Length: 60
Image 1 (cartoon, rainbow, N blue to C red):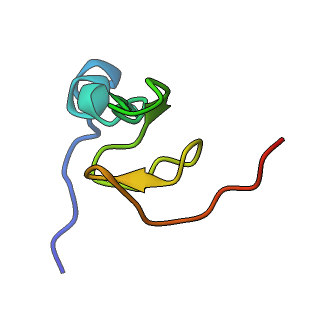
Image 2: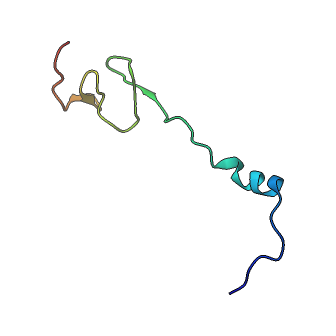
Image 3: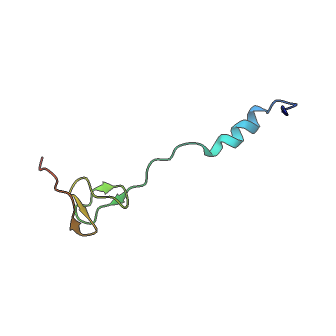
């Protein structure tokens, strides 16, 4: 089995890993209550998706 002949430099390793960082999840605005929510999902604040109430949300 082949093995590396020379060790990789720190710069080469860091350059490869430059795009491995996590990004915050994208947020969309709910058209009904204008709260931030994940796109293509039911709004956790009002329970609506695409103009229809899908989930009943308990009042606080």
